[in-house]
Amino acid sequence: MRRPIFRRRPGEGTPMILAIVLVLLMLFCAIGEFSRLWIIAQGVKEAAQQAVISTVNDNYDDVYHAVREGYAAGWYPDGTGRWDESIDTGDVYGQLSKTLGLENAAGGYQKISGGEVEYTISDLSVVLENNSLGSGQSEGYTALVEIHLEVPVRFLGNLLPAASMTLHTEAKYVPLF
Image (cartoon, rainbow, N blue to C red; front, side, top):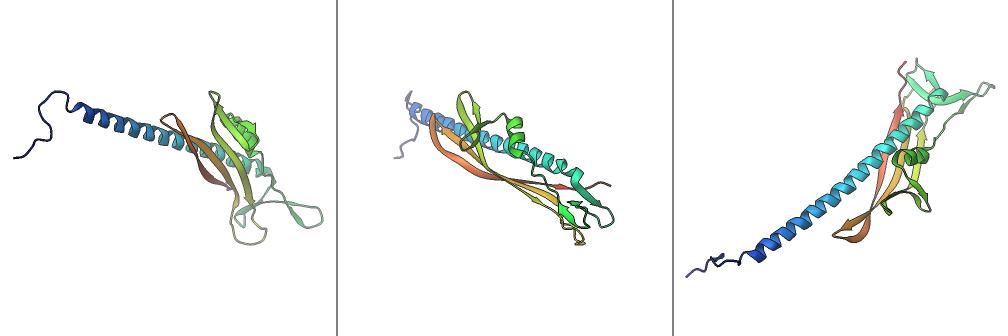
């Protein structure tokens, strides 16, 4: 004779329902924390992209417009018939700090919200790739930025090891005329 899984006695399903509710609550907490991490990473990446675009645009005045050859580069004549490279890496940390409301800390810059560290950015790397004059090839006047992002992870009231990632963004100067 088969025994029914769910009997008809009142209250027997309560532990199973409570277990299912707790599992769903933990699942929603995990999804919420993942969403928080993703939103922070996207916001920092967009702010870094805005800062690198600003850096490239700040270099426009030193760009030699070689319209005939179809490329641009950061060079200026030195007065002796030779050309010297003219590149300004800009103040990416300063722009990120202003845009995101960061505070300077020992290991980089931190976003503090409600008395707790929301995230930390550090290890900024700015590389400007300049075209060579007279090469005939156009690689473009490009700025590359890499920044390390560390976000503390909280789950069910506990502080877990921080999520750590390196964000990469780049911008390329293209003369319109």
